[in-house]
Amino acid sequence: MPDLTEAIIMLRRYLPPPKTETVTLQEALGRVAAADLFAPEDLPHYDRSAMDGYAVRSEDISSASRDNPVILTVIDVLQAGCLPRRPLGAGEAVAVATGAPIPEGADAVVRVEDTRPVTQSGNSRFVPVGGQVAILASVPKGKNISPKGEDVQRGEKIVFAGEKLTPAHIGLLASCGFWKISVLSKPKAAVIPTGNELVSIEATPSIGQIRNSTVWAVAAALKECGVEPSVFEPVPDELDILTARLSEAIDNFDLVVTCGGVSVGQSDLVREAWKQLGAQILFWNLPLRPGKSVLAATCCNKLAIGLSGNPSAALTTFDLLLRPLICDWTGTREGLLVETEAALTETVQQMSGFLKALRVKLMLNGNQLMAQPTKGQLNTVLSSLARSDGYALIPPGKGEIHAGTVVKVLARKERLTSAFKLADKSQHEILSEKVRTDVM
Ligand code: AMP
Ligand code: MG
Image 1 (cartoon, rainbow, N blue to C red):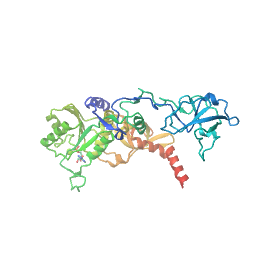
Image 2 (image 1 turned 60 degrees about the vertical axis):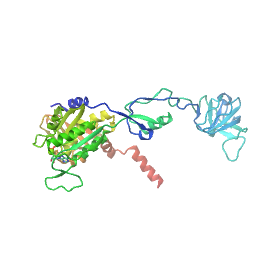
Image 3 (image 1 turned 180 degrees about the horizontal axis):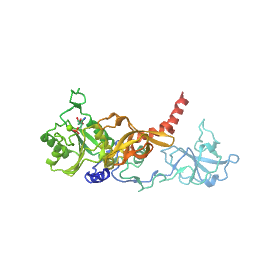
Image 4 (image 1 turned 120 degrees about the vertical axis):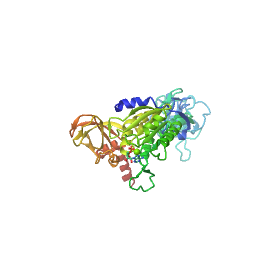
Protein backbone atom coordinates (compact mmCIF):
# COMPACT_ATOMS: atom_id res chain seq x y z
CA MET A 1 0.00 0.00 0.00
CA PRO A 2 1.67 3.30 -1.07
CA ASP A 3 1.37 6.35 1.15
CA LEU A 4 -0.54 9.36 -0.11
CA THR A 5 2.42 11.16 -1.67
CA GLU A 6 3.69 8.01 -3.38
CA ALA A 7 0.18 7.39 -4.70
CA ILE A 8 -0.08 10.92 -6.15
CA ILE A 9 3.31 10.60 -7.85
CA MET A 10 2.39 7.19 -9.21
CA LEU A 11 -0.97 8.26 -10.64
CA ARG A 12 0.43 11.37 -12.33
CA ARG A 13 2.04 9.13 -14.97
CA TYR A 14 -1.31 7.76 -16.10
CA LEU A 15 -3.12 11.00 -16.81
CA PRO A 16 -3.11 11.62 -20.56
CA PRO A 17 -1.64 14.96 -21.71
CA PRO A 18 -4.37 17.61 -21.87
CA LYS A 19 -5.90 18.25 -25.28
CA THR A 20 -6.20 21.79 -26.60
CA GLU A 21 -9.00 23.68 -28.30
CA THR A 22 -9.54 27.12 -29.76
CA VAL A 23 -12.07 29.44 -28.18
CA THR A 24 -13.13 32.99 -28.95
CA LEU A 25 -11.93 35.72 -26.62
CA GLN A 26 -15.43 35.95 -25.07
CA GLU A 27 -15.18 32.32 -24.03
CA ALA A 28 -11.59 32.52 -22.79
CA LEU A 29 -12.12 33.90 -19.27
CA GLY A 30 -11.01 31.35 -16.67
CA ARG A 31 -9.58 28.98 -19.28
CA VAL A 32 -5.95 27.89 -19.16
CA ALA A 33 -3.71 29.15 -21.97
CA ALA A 34 -2.30 26.25 -24.00
CA ALA A 35 0.73 28.18 -25.26
CA ASP A 36 2.77 31.31 -24.62
CA LEU A 37 1.34 34.32 -26.44
CA PHE A 38 3.47 37.23 -27.68
CA ALA A 39 2.51 40.79 -28.59
CA PRO A 40 2.46 41.08 -32.39
CA GLU A 41 3.02 44.85 -32.18
CA ASP A 42 3.92 47.61 -29.76
CA LEU A 43 1.16 48.68 -27.40
CA PRO A 44 0.32 51.53 -27.81
CA HIS A 45 1.40 51.44 -31.43
CA TYR A 46 1.90 55.24 -31.64
CA ASP A 47 2.90 57.99 -29.19
CA ARG A 48 -0.37 59.13 -27.65
CA SER A 49 -1.45 61.81 -25.24
CA ALA A 50 -2.08 60.58 -21.70
CA MET A 51 -3.99 63.77 -20.78
CA ASP A 52 -6.41 66.34 -22.14
CA GLY A 53 -4.14 69.31 -22.78
CA TYR A 54 -1.74 70.86 -25.27
CA ALA A 55 1.07 69.13 -27.12
CA VAL A 56 4.09 71.46 -27.04
CA ARG A 57 7.84 71.67 -27.55
CA SER A 58 9.09 71.51 -23.96
CA GLU A 59 11.96 73.88 -24.75
CA ASP A 60 9.42 76.61 -25.73
CA ILE A 61 7.83 76.62 -22.29
CA SER A 62 10.80 75.94 -20.00
CA SER A 63 10.30 79.33 -18.29
CA ALA A 64 6.48 79.09 -17.99
CA SER A 65 4.82 79.63 -14.61
CA ARG A 66 1.53 81.08 -13.31
CA ASP A 67 3.22 84.46 -12.87
CA ASN A 68 5.10 84.27 -16.11
CA PRO A 69 2.94 82.41 -18.68
CA VAL A 70 4.24 81.55 -22.14
CA ILE A 71 1.80 82.30 -24.96
CA LEU A 72 1.57 79.76 -27.79
CA THR A 73 -0.49 79.72 -30.99
CA VAL A 74 -2.88 76.77 -31.34
CA ILE A 75 -2.48 75.30 -34.82
CA ASP A 76 -4.72 72.25 -34.50
CA VAL A 77 -7.29 70.55 -32.27
CA LEU A 78 -6.97 66.74 -32.12
CA GLN A 79 -9.66 64.53 -30.65
CA ALA A 80 -8.86 60.83 -30.06
CA GLY A 81 -9.02 59.15 -33.46
CA CYS A 82 -7.90 62.31 -35.41
CA LEU A 83 -4.64 62.53 -37.35
CA PRO A 84 -2.28 65.54 -36.96
CA ARG A 85 -2.41 67.76 -40.04
CA ARG A 86 1.11 69.17 -39.85
CA PRO A 87 4.18 69.13 -37.62
CA LEU A 88 4.48 71.53 -34.70
CA GLY A 89 6.88 74.47 -35.04
CA ALA A 90 8.43 76.84 -32.50
CA GLY A 91 5.87 78.86 -30.49
CA GLU A 92 3.03 76.52 -31.46
CA ALA A 93 0.73 74.15 -29.59
CA VAL A 94 -1.86 71.53 -30.57
CA ALA A 95 -4.89 70.92 -28.36
CA VAL A 96 -5.00 67.14 -27.72
CA ALA A 97 -7.57 64.86 -26.10
CA THR A 98 -6.45 61.81 -24.12
CA GLY A 99 -5.51 59.13 -26.65
CA ALA A 100 -4.88 61.56 -29.54
CA PRO A 101 -1.65 61.03 -31.50
CA ILE A 102 1.22 63.37 -30.61
CA PRO A 103 2.05 65.56 -33.62
CA GLU A 104 5.58 65.49 -35.01
CA GLY A 105 7.74 68.17 -33.35
CA ALA A 106 5.93 68.02 -29.99
CA ASP A 107 7.72 66.27 -27.12
CA ALA A 108 5.41 66.85 -24.12
CA VAL A 109 1.81 67.57 -23.17
CA VAL A 110 0.76 70.29 -20.72
CA ARG A 111 -2.45 69.40 -18.82
CA VAL A 112 -5.36 71.69 -19.63
CA GLU A 113 -5.47 72.57 -15.90
CA ASP A 114 -2.06 74.24 -16.32
CA THR A 115 -3.23 76.45 -19.18
CA ARG A 116 -5.55 79.43 -19.68
CA PRO A 117 -7.24 80.38 -22.94
CA VAL A 118 -6.17 83.77 -24.24
CA THR A 119 -8.61 83.43 -27.11
CA GLN A 120 -12.00 82.22 -25.81
CA SER A 121 -14.34 79.92 -27.71
CA GLY A 122 -17.76 79.86 -26.03
CA ASN A 123 -17.37 78.25 -22.65
CA SER A 124 -14.87 75.62 -23.87
CA ARG A 125 -11.68 75.17 -21.88
CA PHE A 126 -9.89 74.76 -25.20
CA VAL A 127 -8.73 77.43 -27.57
CA PRO A 128 -9.92 77.13 -31.20
CA VAL A 129 -7.49 76.72 -34.12
CA GLY A 130 -5.65 80.00 -34.73
CA GLY A 131 -6.22 81.22 -31.16
CA GLN A 132 -3.71 81.62 -28.36
CA VAL A 133 -3.19 79.70 -25.14
CA ALA A 134 -1.23 80.75 -22.05
CA ILE A 135 0.94 77.94 -20.64
CA LEU A 136 1.19 78.27 -16.85
CA ALA A 137 3.70 75.53 -16.02
CA SER A 138 6.78 74.04 -17.60
CA VAL A 139 6.92 70.30 -18.27
CA PRO A 140 9.91 68.07 -18.93
CA LYS A 141 10.37 66.26 -22.22
CA GLY A 142 8.06 63.21 -22.52
CA LYS A 143 5.65 64.41 -19.82
CA ASN A 144 2.05 63.17 -20.26
CA ILE A 145 2.90 61.15 -23.35
CA SER A 146 2.34 57.38 -23.51
CA PRO A 147 5.15 56.45 -25.85
CA LYS A 148 4.80 53.70 -28.44
CA GLY A 149 5.45 50.35 -26.71
CA GLU A 150 4.98 51.79 -23.19
CA ASP A 151 2.57 49.00 -22.22
CA VAL A 152 4.09 46.07 -24.09
CA GLN A 153 6.71 45.87 -26.77
CA ARG A 154 6.42 43.86 -29.96
CA GLY A 155 7.50 40.27 -29.25
CA GLU A 156 7.01 40.57 -25.48
CA LYS A 157 5.29 37.60 -23.80
CA ILE A 158 1.83 38.65 -22.69
CA VAL A 159 0.42 35.27 -21.58
CA PHE A 160 2.36 32.29 -20.25
CA ALA A 161 1.32 28.74 -21.16
CA GLY A 162 -0.56 27.22 -18.21
CA GLU A 163 -1.80 30.59 -16.95
CA LYS A 164 -5.49 30.95 -16.16
CA LEU A 165 -6.90 33.87 -18.16
CA THR A 166 -8.15 36.79 -16.08
CA PRO A 167 -10.14 39.87 -17.17
CA ALA A 168 -6.83 41.78 -17.45
CA HIS A 169 -5.46 39.10 -19.80
CA ILE A 170 -8.66 39.35 -21.86
CA GLY A 171 -8.18 43.12 -22.14
CA LEU A 172 -4.53 42.74 -23.08
CA LEU A 173 -5.29 40.08 -25.69
CA ALA A 174 -8.08 42.25 -27.13
CA SER A 175 -5.68 45.24 -27.29
CA CYS A 176 -3.21 43.10 -29.21
CA GLY A 177 -5.85 41.88 -31.67
CA PHE A 178 -6.17 38.26 -30.49
CA TRP A 179 -9.62 37.02 -31.34
CA LYS A 180 -9.16 33.26 -31.00
CA ILE A 181 -7.14 31.70 -28.21
CA SER A 182 -5.76 28.20 -27.83
CA VAL A 183 -6.66 26.85 -24.38
CA LEU A 184 -6.45 23.51 -22.61
CA SER A 185 -9.60 21.45 -23.11
CA LYS A 186 -11.35 20.43 -19.95
CA PRO A 187 -10.75 16.70 -19.54
CA LYS A 188 -13.96 14.66 -19.52
CA ALA A 189 -14.62 12.29 -16.65
CA ALA A 190 -17.21 9.54 -16.36
CA VAL A 191 -18.61 9.34 -12.83
CA ILE A 192 -20.26 5.98 -12.31
CA PRO A 193 -22.35 4.95 -9.30
CA THR A 194 -22.54 1.25 -8.44
CA GLY A 195 -24.92 -0.52 -6.11
CA ASN A 196 -28.30 -2.31 -6.17
CA GLU A 197 -29.55 -0.12 -3.33
CA LEU A 198 -29.28 3.18 -5.20
CA VAL A 199 -32.31 5.22 -6.24
CA SER A 200 -32.35 8.58 -8.00
CA ILE A 201 -32.33 11.76 -5.92
CA GLU A 202 -35.93 12.58 -6.89
CA ALA A 203 -37.19 9.21 -5.55
CA THR A 204 -38.22 8.42 -1.99
CA PRO A 205 -35.99 5.55 -0.91
CA SER A 206 -37.65 2.63 0.89
CA ILE A 207 -35.89 0.89 3.76
CA GLY A 208 -32.60 -0.50 2.54
CA GLN A 209 -32.43 1.88 -0.40
CA ILE A 210 -30.36 5.04 -0.52
CA ARG A 211 -30.36 8.10 -2.74
CA ASN A 212 -27.53 8.14 -5.25
CA SER A 213 -25.76 11.14 -3.74
CA THR A 214 -22.04 10.36 -3.81
CA VAL A 215 -21.63 10.77 -7.55
CA TRP A 216 -23.07 14.28 -7.39
CA ALA A 217 -20.62 15.26 -4.69
CA VAL A 218 -17.73 13.75 -6.65
CA ALA A 219 -18.90 15.37 -9.89
CA ALA A 220 -19.02 18.74 -8.09
CA ALA A 221 -15.49 18.24 -6.77
CA LEU A 222 -14.28 17.32 -10.26
CA LYS A 223 -15.83 20.51 -11.61
CA GLU A 224 -13.92 22.56 -9.05
CA CYS A 225 -10.75 21.00 -10.41
CA GLY A 226 -11.48 21.99 -14.01
CA VAL A 227 -12.87 18.66 -15.22
CA GLU A 228 -16.16 18.17 -17.08
CA PRO A 229 -17.98 15.32 -15.35
CA SER A 230 -20.72 13.13 -16.86
CA VAL A 231 -22.76 11.28 -14.27
CA PHE A 232 -23.86 7.78 -15.36
CA GLU A 233 -27.02 5.97 -14.28
CA PRO A 234 -26.42 3.61 -11.32
CA VAL A 235 -24.93 0.28 -12.33
CA PRO A 236 -26.22 -2.81 -10.45
CA ASP A 237 -23.72 -5.03 -8.64
CA GLU A 238 -23.51 -7.52 -11.51
CA LEU A 239 -20.15 -8.22 -13.04
CA ASP A 240 -21.22 -8.40 -16.71
CA ILE A 241 -23.19 -5.20 -16.63
CA LEU A 242 -20.49 -3.39 -14.65
CA THR A 243 -17.75 -4.55 -17.03
CA ALA A 244 -19.76 -3.37 -20.04
CA ARG A 245 -20.31 0.08 -18.52
CA LEU A 246 -16.67 0.49 -17.52
CA SER A 247 -15.55 -0.54 -20.99
CA GLU A 248 -17.84 2.03 -22.59
CA ALA A 249 -16.61 4.70 -20.16
CA ILE A 250 -12.88 4.08 -20.66
CA ASP A 251 -13.36 4.29 -24.44
CA ASN A 252 -15.13 7.62 -24.32
CA PHE A 253 -13.69 9.57 -21.39
CA ASP A 254 -10.28 10.86 -20.29
CA LEU A 255 -10.80 9.66 -16.72
CA VAL A 256 -13.20 7.17 -15.13
CA VAL A 257 -14.27 7.49 -11.50
CA THR A 258 -16.56 4.91 -9.94
CA CYS A 259 -18.31 5.23 -6.58
CA GLY A 260 -18.88 2.13 -4.46
CA GLY A 261 -17.96 -1.50 -4.86
CA VAL A 262 -14.23 -1.27 -4.03
CA SER A 263 -14.27 -2.84 -0.60
CA VAL A 264 -14.12 -6.54 0.30
CA GLY A 265 -17.85 -7.39 0.27
CA GLN A 266 -19.42 -9.96 -2.06
CA SER A 267 -20.97 -7.27 -4.20
CA ASP A 268 -17.77 -5.19 -4.45
CA LEU A 269 -17.00 -5.99 -8.06
CA VAL A 270 -15.25 -2.94 -9.44
CA ARG A 271 -11.73 -4.37 -9.11
CA GLU A 272 -12.76 -7.63 -10.77
CA ALA A 273 -14.51 -5.75 -13.58
CA TRP A 274 -11.36 -3.72 -14.37
CA LYS A 275 -9.29 -6.90 -14.30
CA GLN A 276 -11.66 -8.50 -16.84
CA LEU A 277 -11.03 -5.50 -19.10
CA GLY A 278 -7.29 -6.12 -18.89
CA ALA A 279 -6.60 -3.15 -16.66
CA GLN A 280 -3.47 -3.02 -14.54
CA ILE A 281 -4.32 -2.48 -10.88
CA LEU A 282 -1.97 0.21 -9.54
CA PHE A 283 -3.03 0.01 -5.93
CA TRP A 284 -5.95 -0.98 -3.78
CA ASN A 285 -6.51 0.91 -0.50
CA LEU A 286 -4.51 3.77 1.02
CA PRO A 287 -3.39 4.33 4.63
CA LEU A 288 -5.94 7.10 5.07
CA ARG A 289 -8.87 7.42 7.44
CA PRO A 290 -11.55 8.08 6.38
CA GLY A 291 -11.09 7.31 2.71
CA LYS A 292 -9.11 4.07 2.90
CA SER A 293 -11.17 2.28 0.26
CA VAL A 294 -9.82 3.35 -3.08
CA LEU A 295 -8.77 1.54 -6.20
CA ALA A 296 -6.44 2.89 -8.87
CA ALA A 297 -6.09 1.15 -12.20
CA THR A 298 -4.90 1.96 -15.67
CA CYS A 299 -6.68 0.76 -18.78
CA CYS A 300 -6.18 1.84 -22.40
CA ASN A 301 -3.53 4.35 -21.22
CA LYS A 302 -6.08 6.11 -19.08
CA LEU A 303 -6.62 6.31 -15.37
CA ALA A 304 -9.52 4.69 -13.51
CA ILE A 305 -10.22 5.50 -9.89
CA GLY A 306 -12.62 3.59 -7.67
CA LEU A 307 -13.83 5.58 -4.68
CA SER A 308 -15.92 4.39 -1.77
CA GLY A 309 -19.68 4.65 -2.20
CA ASN A 310 -19.85 6.45 1.09
CA PRO A 311 -20.00 10.17 0.29
CA SER A 312 -17.79 11.50 3.09
CA ALA A 313 -15.16 8.79 2.59
CA ALA A 314 -15.24 9.34 -1.19
CA LEU A 315 -14.83 13.10 -0.76
CA THR A 316 -11.96 12.74 1.70
CA THR A 317 -10.09 10.48 -0.71
CA PHE A 318 -10.89 12.91 -3.48
CA ASP A 319 -9.67 15.91 -1.52
CA LEU A 320 -6.41 14.36 -0.37
CA LEU A 321 -5.47 12.17 -3.31
CA LEU A 322 -7.24 13.37 -6.43
CA ARG A 323 -7.58 17.13 -5.92
CA PRO A 324 -3.85 17.95 -6.17
CA LEU A 325 -3.38 15.46 -8.98
CA ILE A 326 -6.30 16.68 -11.09
CA CYS A 327 -5.72 20.40 -10.47
CA ASP A 328 -2.18 19.92 -11.68
CA TRP A 329 -3.48 18.09 -14.76
CA THR A 330 -5.97 20.82 -15.67
CA GLY A 331 -3.93 23.81 -14.49
CA THR A 332 -6.75 24.83 -12.10
CA ARG A 333 -5.14 26.26 -8.98
CA GLU A 334 -8.49 27.45 -7.59
CA GLY A 335 -9.48 23.85 -6.93
CA LEU A 336 -6.55 23.25 -4.58
CA LEU A 337 -6.85 23.19 -0.83
CA VAL A 338 -4.59 25.65 0.98
CA GLU A 339 -1.92 24.22 3.24
CA THR A 340 -1.58 25.90 6.63
CA GLU A 341 -1.05 25.04 10.30
CA ALA A 342 -3.40 25.25 13.26
CA ALA A 343 -3.45 24.28 16.92
CA LEU A 344 -5.93 21.56 17.91
CA THR A 345 -8.60 22.77 20.33
CA GLU A 346 -8.93 19.31 21.85
CA THR A 347 -6.86 16.19 22.41
CA VAL A 348 -7.33 13.57 19.68
CA GLN A 349 -6.48 9.89 19.60
CA GLN A 350 -4.33 8.49 16.84
CA MET A 351 -4.07 4.77 17.25
CA SER A 352 -3.50 3.55 13.71
CA GLY A 353 -0.77 3.51 11.12
CA PHE A 354 -3.11 5.54 8.90
CA LEU A 355 -3.07 9.26 8.21
CA LYS A 356 -6.11 10.63 10.02
CA ALA A 357 -8.02 13.41 8.22
CA LEU A 358 -9.96 15.23 10.95
CA ARG A 359 -12.72 17.52 9.71
CA VAL A 360 -12.18 20.84 11.45
CA LYS A 361 -13.62 24.29 11.81
CA LEU A 362 -10.96 27.02 11.76
CA MET A 363 -10.95 30.11 13.95
CA LEU A 364 -8.50 32.72 15.13
CA ASN A 365 -7.53 33.02 18.77
CA GLY A 366 -5.36 36.13 18.87
CA ASN A 367 -2.79 35.41 16.19
CA GLN A 368 -3.10 31.63 16.47
CA LEU A 369 -5.23 29.72 14.00
CA MET A 370 -7.18 27.03 15.86
CA ALA A 371 -8.66 23.79 14.48
CA GLN A 372 -11.76 22.46 16.19
CA PRO A 373 -12.98 18.99 15.13
CA THR A 374 -16.59 19.18 13.91
CA LYS A 375 -19.20 16.97 15.55
CA GLY A 376 -19.38 13.49 14.01
CA GLN A 377 -16.06 12.26 12.69
CA LEU A 378 -17.27 8.82 11.56
CA ASN A 379 -16.79 8.17 7.89
CA THR A 380 -20.54 7.65 7.48
CA VAL A 381 -21.27 11.25 8.60
CA LEU A 382 -21.34 13.80 5.78
CA SER A 383 -22.79 16.80 7.63
CA SER A 384 -19.60 17.26 9.65
CA LEU A 385 -17.66 17.55 6.41
CA ALA A 386 -20.11 20.18 5.11
CA ARG A 387 -19.70 22.11 8.35
CA SER A 388 -15.90 21.92 8.29
CA ASP A 389 -13.39 24.34 6.76
CA GLY A 390 -10.81 21.68 5.98
CA TYR A 391 -8.85 18.74 7.32
CA ALA A 392 -6.36 18.64 10.18
CA LEU A 393 -3.88 15.94 9.25
CA ILE A 394 -2.82 13.67 12.10
CA PRO A 395 0.24 11.64 11.07
CA PRO A 396 0.12 7.86 11.52
CA GLY A 397 0.90 6.09 14.77
CA LYS A 398 1.42 8.90 17.25
CA GLY A 399 -0.79 7.89 20.15
CA GLU A 400 -2.45 10.83 21.89
CA ILE A 401 -2.13 14.27 20.26
CA HIS A 402 -2.70 16.89 22.92
CA ALA A 403 -4.86 19.99 22.67
CA GLY A 404 -2.69 22.90 21.58
CA THR A 405 -0.48 20.77 19.30
CA VAL A 406 0.09 22.53 15.98
CA VAL A 407 -0.74 20.27 13.06
CA LYS A 408 -0.82 20.61 9.27
CA VAL A 409 -4.20 21.68 7.90
CA LEU A 410 -5.58 21.54 4.36
CA ALA A 411 -8.31 24.14 4.11
CA ARG A 412 -10.75 25.39 1.53
CA LYS A 413 -9.42 28.79 0.50
CA GLU A 414 -12.67 30.70 1.03
CA ARG A 415 -13.20 29.10 4.45
CA LEU A 416 -9.68 29.98 5.57
CA THR A 417 -10.16 33.58 4.46
CA SER A 418 -13.44 33.80 6.32
CA ALA A 419 -11.82 32.39 9.47
CA PHE A 420 -9.38 35.31 9.33
CA LYS A 421 -12.11 37.79 8.43
CA LEU A 422 -14.14 36.92 11.51
CA ALA A 423 -11.37 38.44 13.60
CA ASP A 424 -10.22 41.08 11.19
CA LYS A 425 -12.55 42.65 8.64
CA SER A 426 -11.08 42.75 5.16
CA GLN A 427 -10.37 46.01 3.34
CA HIS A 428 -13.17 45.12 0.97
CA GLU A 429 -15.75 44.83 3.70
CA ILE A 430 -14.68 48.09 5.29
CA LEU A 431 -14.87 49.80 1.92
CA SER A 432 -18.27 48.38 0.98
CA GLU A 433 -19.66 49.33 4.40
CA LYS A 434 -18.34 52.87 3.89
CA VAL A 435 -19.89 53.03 0.42
CA ARG A 436 -23.25 51.87 1.82
CA THR A 437 -23.25 54.43 4.62
CA ASP A 438 -21.98 57.24 2.38
CA VAL A 439 -24.74 56.58 -0.13
CA MET A 440 -27.47 56.51 2.48
P1 AMP B 1 -19.73 0.59 -1.00
O1 AMP B 1 -18.56 1.47 -1.20
O2 AMP B 1 -20.36 0.14 -2.26
O3 AMP B 1 -19.40 -0.54 -0.06
O4 AMP B 1 -20.80 1.47 -0.25
C1 AMP B 1 -20.54 2.03 1.00
C2 AMP B 1 -21.78 2.73 1.52
O5 AMP B 1 -22.09 3.82 0.68
C3 AMP B 1 -23.01 1.86 1.51
O6 AMP B 1 -23.78 2.18 2.65
C4 AMP B 1 -23.73 2.24 0.24
O7 AMP B 1 -25.11 2.05 0.32
C5 AMP B 1 -23.40 3.69 0.14
N1 AMP B 1 -23.35 4.13 -1.25
C6 AMP B 1 -22.80 3.48 -2.27
N2 AMP B 1 -22.90 4.19 -3.41
C7 AMP B 1 -23.55 5.31 -3.08
C8 AMP B 1 -23.98 6.44 -3.81
N3 AMP B 1 -23.76 6.56 -5.12
N4 AMP B 1 -24.62 7.41 -3.13
C9 AMP B 1 -24.86 7.31 -1.81
N5 AMP B 1 -24.46 6.29 -1.08
C10 AMP B 1 -23.83 5.28 -1.69
MG1 MG C 1 -21.82 -1.12 -2.95
